Length: 179
Image (tube, rainbow, N blue to C red; front, side, top):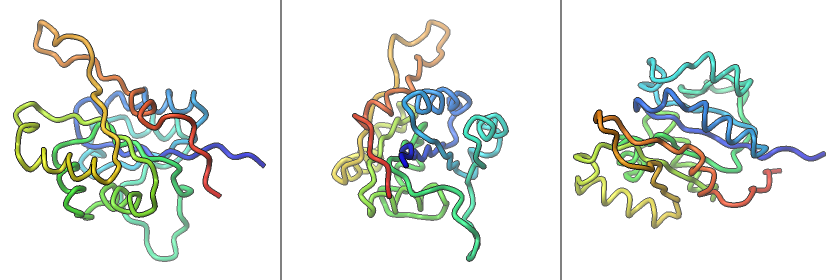
């Protein structure tokens, strides 16, 4: 029996998260099953949780499960963090595991699971020395970072287009399912 590879999508609290359905659609078109893990702040209105649950057919995870509760997702074949915020990148690089999203990222590294990241960090924060050091540490761990933006800044001051599919490109060819 052939099973589809399973992709964890970790969603952080950035305004662009409202479009995370684009990443889920692209992943499903590439034959991935998708489960979403969101930071607690992201769950507070940064994206349409009901629509994402309907699209994936699975509940969004944001809190730790209790002992004895079944695992709602199979083990991941790959993980995408998009949008990845300044806070999440820095805590993850420091090994801080105070949310399910961060704990999942810390554990995925230890399991050797491929991880792709599309940062969504303000220019003023991106030059902070802690952020630069975090990127260096995570890259040294094999985490794959991509520039999700393309095109020129918009005249009205709006952000350039966020290319969700770049996360899948960072993962390369189809990953073989676990098990």
